[in-house]
Length: 87
Image (cartoon, rainbow, N blue to C red; front, side, top):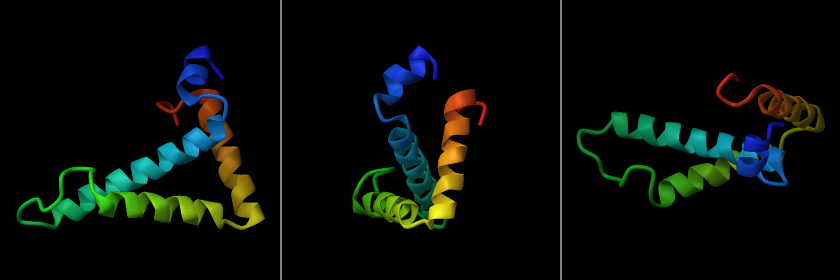
C-alpha cells in the first residue's frame, strides 16, 4: 500500500475500503431513487434514507458466508494493491 493510501485509509484499510464501498452503494441508491422523482424530496446524500441504506449494505457485507467474505476481502486487497481508481 502506498504512503498516500496509508494516510487516507488509516490502520484498518480493509475496513475503510468496506465503508467506501457502502458509501458508494448508498450514493448510487440515492441517485437512482432521485432519478425517479419529478422533484427532489431529499437533500442529496443526506438524511436517514441514505444512512439506512449504508447500514443495510454493511449488514449484508457482515453476513456474507465465509467463502463469500474471503472472496470479497481478496477483491478489497486487490483494490488496495492497484489503487481504487484502477479497480
